[in-house]
Length: 140
Image: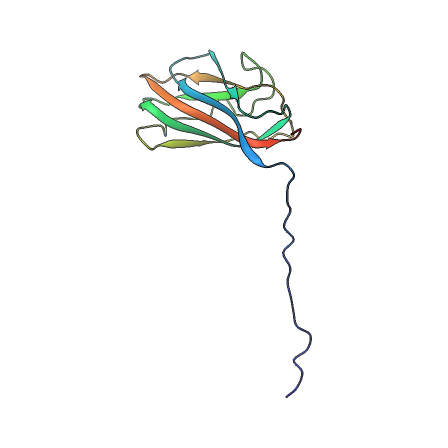
């Protein structure tokens, strides 16, 4: 029997980050009827420099009526380079077990401030949501 040649192998080089993905900030019961008012998140992690990777809004009570929109910013009054655009829609928050996967703006900014939700177009009726920001902390 002839030798089929050298065996082919493939390797997978996994990149292990020294910065674990973690819950960075939490905003319980965000009021989606408060137009142009800052609602500050609570810092969960112990570091200061972070990059947001994933933001989720989870329905708490009420229902979206109209098209509630709003952004997330590092400074009050929509200040700084926004994590999330003011045109982000939350109309998917229609009832129990609904959520919105929030789109993070493309940026090379590493943040240090505790962010604020600022609703641009308020919901017509009562609507509350829990927001969670996940990401990497660089100075753990």
